[in-house]
Image (cartoon, helix red, strand yellow):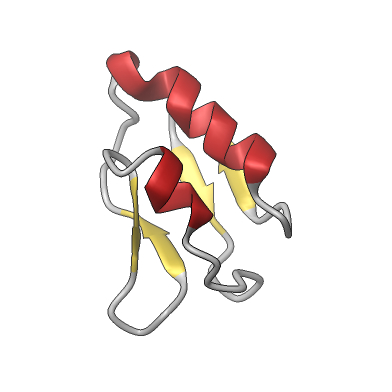
Length: 62
């Protein structure tokens, strides 16, 4: 699985790194970012939960 964040649409709520810190973090410039190339298998369900929980739907995990 690969995760992506549309950083321009991110509202910086911090929800995704709180749900899946193994994949998402808040960038130094504000918006959330993905910091791994491939989502580790052990946290795939958490990454999908972060996608589904994003209040502005800017996360894509596939």
